Length: 204
Image (cartoon, one colour):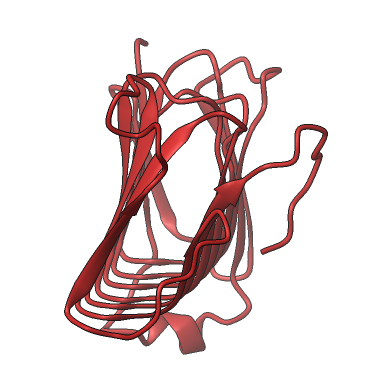
């Protein structure tokens, strides 16, 4: 297997994603509460919660909890389709190719490793309380379309809503390895900052 792809096809709520180098296989999943359908084929792990309509999964399955461990020996793409709520993805130790959330994101925290090339972090459908932490010395750009409130990049906080904004670190244009964070649909309380060098955990 040369790469992995984790897909939540109908939303994700109360999910923890992290690396586990001791895994003999591609992944390990543990669920409490309502069990989703899980399929793994050709490196793609697809998790589907059933009977989902609009944002009903946030309420009808409030007791569902998922813990997903990924094998860091291969690079990963992560896709959450249908909305993300209360998701913590500690991807330190994992080579991330991309991270996508479609359908909105609320209370999401990403802890990232050093990128290889330009790694896109894409959110569509609106953002509320999302934190992205990257390693020291890694360049980053944040682009928001659809208005913003309380947006920060390494402590820089522009004012106003407007129709959109783009912020980048001074080294972003010339960097080979970097993160490109794009948000469509507006953002409320999104931050992109640097992990402490000795951090073992971060709270957004």
